[in-house]
Image: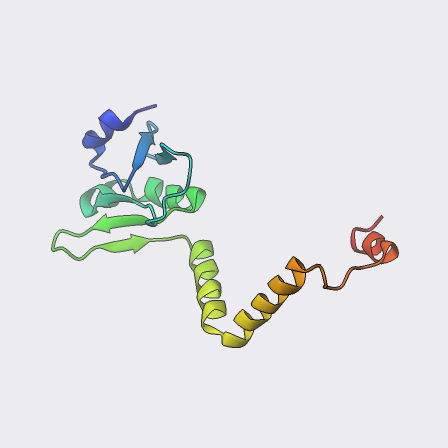
Length: 132
């Protein structure tokens, strides 16, 4: 296992309050000092030459870790690599956030749940739901 001190050799940069551990295959394993997700959308970054040289490993890393990768272009035009699953989840979240009727339903459900005034299934219904 390679550590942060070896990061310069692979050319990666460090996001806000984020440390990296590198495996021998070049995977970047994020770890947070405080154990809490970074509120500033953490992502690893590499330059375009490193990305091209290790494209397979970086794509596997993005898919496994569900953490986007910023690739720094040579002419200042950067791009982000994200897994299809993460992209779809983000698109669904954006759709819900932009749909005022869905947001109202969520708010109403939260109030109902908080006041315990929502529907409660009977024991028979619960048994059927969980197939007992």
